[in-house]
Length: 298
Image (cartoon, rainbow, N blue to C red; front, side):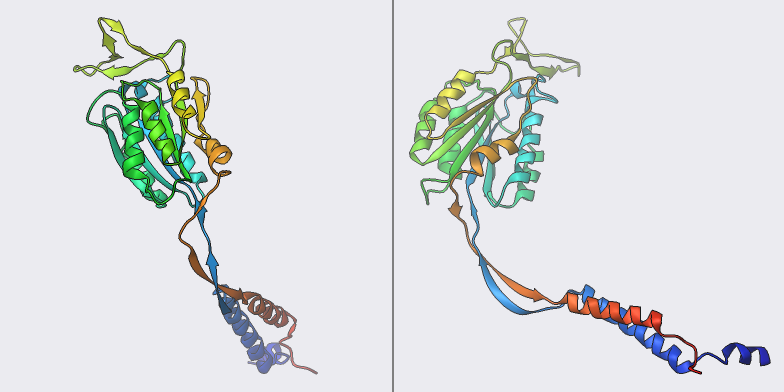
């Protein structure tokens, strides 16, 4: 007991309590600061701008060619995913086409929904074989774009350019009348071409044959150049076997810089942030505690 008395003789209970109060108050005020207190609400109207973009994606069997890795179709899907990362409030839709055209995703700003729709796209996405570019352009013009305005509309056409008499130039002219611009991305090689890998009934990998010869699909760049030349500001980009398909770059160069239309405006409430006051007060309380001695004044 004498020993304890000697140890505690210089310690002030009041000062210990005061130090505890400082620590408790300091942490309490710090917690308040972390909740980011704010006041003085002010409504602010945010105007959003953007364009309407419809991607026409070729899902014919020729898109399985592996001259662009992993194959033309899968690389195109990856490029559309990259494009979604770049969009700044624009609406986007997807139409797949082969022997017919199907709306896979209507115009939307819900990019998560578009990503989900993309995962389901394969060469089975359309019920008939073939490549009907004209049908895809007509489908986008009539069924996907709205008729409210004659501008701020882009089609991104991704294909190897092979077309089975669907009159794509006439379809492009009709699109141009609606103020739609066509940006065509041609996949593959215009000279040598590429073979189409298929799986036979026995499960063996081989290449598509016609009249006992392997089929080589060449990029029809001339056809795509004709299609885009019909629309104002139309662009053609050829992507060969050793080249990268970068839709994000196409967006930055051709779409992000183009005129945009006003989308629905949003009203956001802005507050004055006041957490700094509480943060400084918490620091003062906690630092003060360090400098308060527990010992009694002599």
